[in-house]
Length: 143
Ligand SMILES: Cc1cc2nc3c(=O)[nH]c(=O)nc-3n(C[C@H](O)[C@H](O)[C@H](O)COP(=O)(O)O)c2cc1C
Image 1 (cartoon, helix red, strand yellow):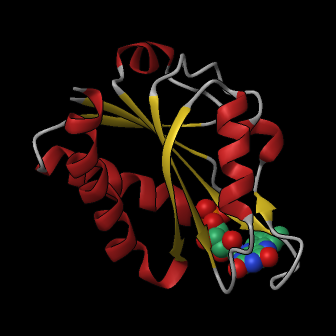
Image 2 (tube, rainbow, N blue to C red):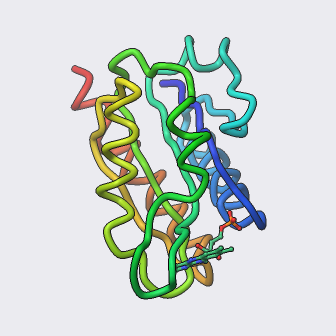
């Protein structure tokens, strides 16, 4: 199985989480790579069986939360109906960001199978568990 992890990151947390997801997928026997939402790796996207898209929570901490860099995310290449997972990193409260990210990814023709919020002080544990969940879910889902 092959995955592409696309990240939108302002201060580096989401990029770091994306890197951990990639490492964990590889450790579990997948092929995986990452790229920024600003320069999506088109060859890797075409070859990917699964796409993961991560961004950060932008808002007024306890309200008005939305996916950071929504403008960039709404312009990523079409995901061609591929199984897609979203994640966000946040500080305090992700609000309804996951629903909003799911809507953006569905607009890009992703077949969104799940989405996860990862607190920025728990990047490692969150990213590892996201990768584990994807590996567990996807072979059955694609069969
Ligand atoms: C402008 C701005 C707004 C933010 N708003 C929220 C928010 O509403 N709720 C929250 O929990 N975290 C909020 N955060 C924290 C970020 O979502 C968090 O630090 C995230 O991990 C940053 O990811 P990045 O390092 O990939 O940019 C905000 C950060 C910034 C810079």
